[in-house]
View: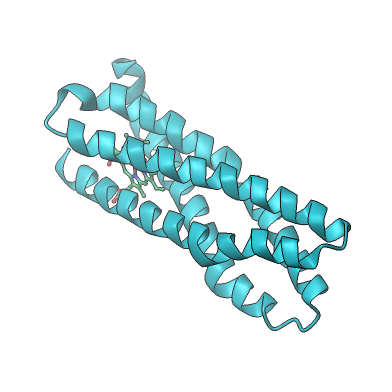
Length: 160
Ligand code: HEM
């Protein structure tokens, strides 16, 4: 594994960084650009429908990058021997952050699917309840966690 990592290090780190860019950048664009625009839509049904649709597209785009982020992280853990190094605590911290972000993402996907079903049944209040939590807390939490992981990554790349 170590030889493969040395051979393809630039490409592996590139895939890791681009995955973080798509995941964290996608959430920031959705929450602070698209969402601000959606809330201007007057019809509640149309507004919720647009938000549910945009979230579906966001989640579909980010999911492969979330997996790629983990795969490249595992390659770096092995390649740099992080678990046996002085960086093991920070490496475990990043693993923990990824896990919480992933669980949060899966719960958001489930809530969004539920909201879509409620919208098609005409239950707008129920759909609003499902989507509100995503925008108010779940996406911002993942943005903060993602930025923390990027900061630790910047520390790694300047010290490893
Ligand atoms: C799953 C556990 C993770 C591990 C073990 C890990 C490990 C690393 C390592 C070793 C580096 C330094 C690469 C180098 O310069 O050679 C790095 C960089 C980076 N990581 Fe992670 N990472 C993990 C998760 C994450 C997550 C969840 C994100 C963001 C969502 C992230 C974003 C970044 C970014 C943006 C860099 C580049 C920083 C820079 O070059 O200044 N990582 N990571």
